[in-house]
Image (cartoon, rainbow, N blue to C red; front, side, top):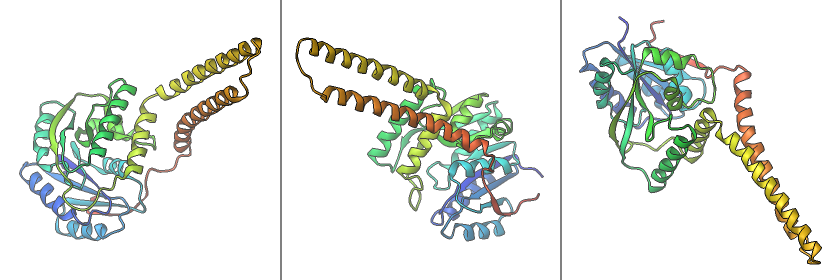
Length: 309
């Protein structure tokens, strides 16, 4: 029997929490009275996550495992889950239990009432530093401005999506994937579900500052052309500033006042900095084009467990 619900759980070094994750997920799904599957995507974990997932799959046929040959990142792991999911409604949830599995029945009720995307909107975030909260708030403000409000604020990847929406996302070929932006761009009937995000159940975060910055860059460069336009305006501004500086130097010379080379040097540094910044912005877009046109697969699967086909 095909499942009604598919739960996608990306996993990377989750040995401290994965058994509790499965216990809570399976407990919730068993109360819903519909066939389900839980897809654990092992994203090249280096601890004992793979072994624990094998044990879970051996004990529970509803638990299915997709193991990558190497680490490809959270967004790619979720994309693989979408490729393998067979349910009519698909839930994306992280393994760290910061997003409560107990909200899935409420999401399912919204889905049954006609909503095709039910995304979690964080009203409160427990267990996170002031720096993380401040940077998250600043980022969502920036991405909202750059995308003209297309991407909802204070949302992550925790959501339920309809099969039609999942198939639309699967048809998008880009490699630099920012899924919350892709779901927002796809449209369909969407609604938020506010909740308090809990502290991580166990272990450490697998999204350090470096990965957060990469995800932020993917969101900006994948869904906004405004940085390119800003680069052009920067060029116009500093070009005008350089012309004005040269005019000032000329006027000083007419009055026999020597300004030396300091002004010219400063103007040259400003101009050079602007040119390099603009080249960097264009380089980010070109790099994404290169990543897509070379045609490599998003991921390589080394092993699957409990897959029927």
